[in-house]
Image (cartoon, rainbow, N blue to C red; front, top):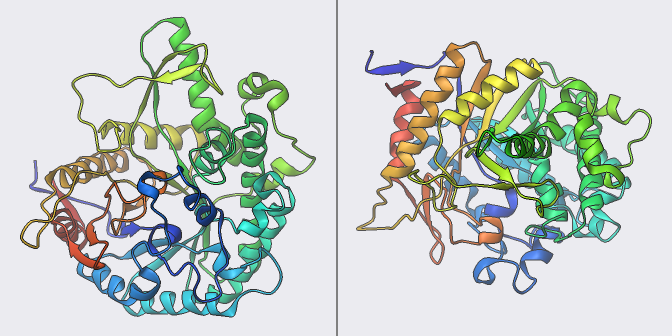
Length: 448
């Protein structure tokens, strides 16, 4: 076997972030409050009472962070726009200060030879729109289209890869069913209606972006997907796995690629199922230029009669490695997942838009040695290459994350970055895994 495995010449190597997790500057540049500002400032919602008010101070330190991207050899950078920086009150005239900030960021990335991959929505809905019902209000779909038009006109000369939504499952269910994420709702019917409006707004935003498109522009969406396996061969566990797969994966993949929600899930949800109007599914199933896949682990489930919204509970197998998030390290799942998505949904192009791991990093004598993260990324890249060899049209890989950052309900207690952030001083230090990843990006190869 050769010592290095070469990826296709046009394979894209990148890293990813999200606005609320890194930017800070929450009251600067005309930015309005988001649902995550409100949620993180609500006592008891976030570990240690942390907020994204300052985060990694990327709002002020973005030039230094682009220099770090250069040191890591990144060819692409996936980041999100803070919707409340563009529409502080949710609608009306766009905020020119916010648009100018992102114009400078895009121009500087291009000058550094780094291709921007821009996510429109990574969970930070303007609070003003939430006050009007948020994603449960169909009008937010129209506001999202307006937002997409605005960004395409302002940034379209420099941005040619657009992602409409990041992980609509998380927004719908963690934000509106379990209450773990903003806005903190706990109602199944609302969560399902939100999921439908998110998909509908994807279609609306895609049409808006394409109306302003330049030659070569591409539009996709990013889903968090997991292979689902039954904990045993019992009929009850197999049924639980089918429902859990429907809840997590098929509920989003089917309407996007097949123009319909899974019939078994519609029947399962019954009276809680969303209001789907004439023409909605046609708009949702607008052709994609690519699908972004966020992969971290698999799900093994058993039947659990009291679980909501499906009668399935996750099981953690003994004797396995786990990240600090409690997620099983299972690289083979990435290969399985990519193969399944391509085979069942005939995808034209796929990107791994997030893959990474949190481990208990420590700074020692100015260095961070993190062999577990390096191993995690390495093993997943080998599985990604296997998928390419089997004909999966995988075009790129983005590590989560460029920087340690605000990890949502976990606050600053979990570190995913290739770059260590000392939050009190905002000092950045490239971890050993980052140095290793830089060798991968520059050689377009991983050790066999």
